[in-house]
Image (cartoon, rainbow, N blue to C red; front, top):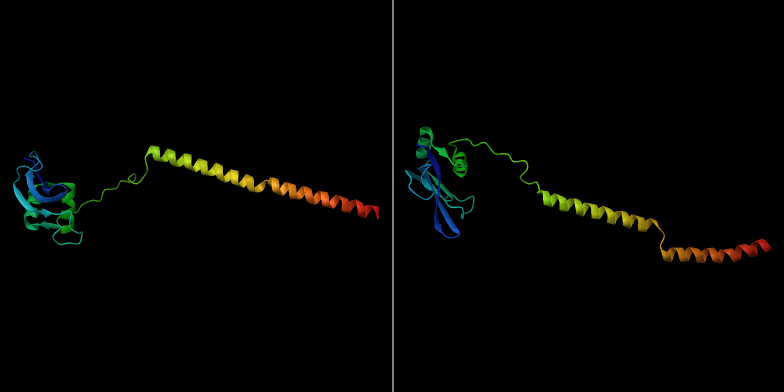
Length: 150
């Protein structure tokens, strides 16, 4: 018989309260269990003492007999110092999906095109500047003619 230490759900809708139990792994989640080891109330603050209550002596006994804890219960046992839990590493967890990457590439491409257009517009003289330059050249031309005649 495979023994597991796991959570069973209780409480009202959207107000969960869990019991930490030792059960046969083949029994239903909220069904028959062998022994109750403690409780877990996720609605309480993380620093609250009543968030997790655990009978450490009985938990140590069941671990020595070969009971396998679930992931969440393994965290509780690690916090109680009964069992060390290896932290899982998922380097791709925060990485965006394919569609988000495609959208980011398109956005970066559009921003680059806009920056190029802005740089080209800043480098090329505008129509107003061209007219001002033309007026200056026209004003200087008669003055230059008068200087050569004198």
